[in-house]
Length: 153
Image (cartoon, rainbow, N blue to C red; front, side, top):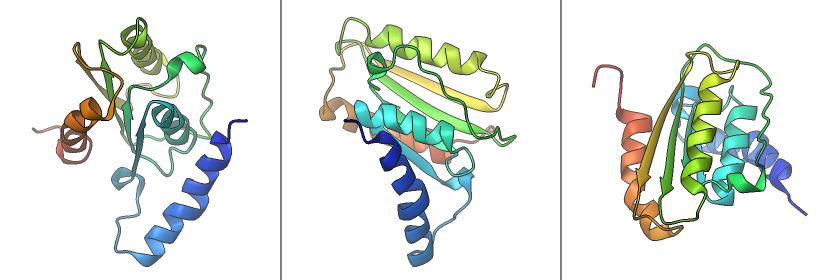
């Protein structure tokens, strides 16, 4: 049985507060991100969009969107501050991966929750497979765009 909701509650209600209490962190949502690949990418989508007060940045690599073809997310509340999503997929992962991530991006852009508040960077490597090798190549690009790119650059 899936434990995604428990995981999301643990990260949001236990782990992040523990880290913020015990380490020098910038606690605000614009400095806080969540990310993962495959099923970790899918649960990171849910975590980030269900908890926009906590997560301002999502790093989503090769999400298992086929598990939930009709992805419905009703966030607790919308925020006027920008949310950034770095979305990556490899063209050699599956017959439907590219279609799924493009559809996810379009649905997010069209969402009432989003409405000009979200920036999405979609990166596709047509030779990429569903593997850590390709995700590790993409990781520095995602971190740079999510945390260091501003409107000016």
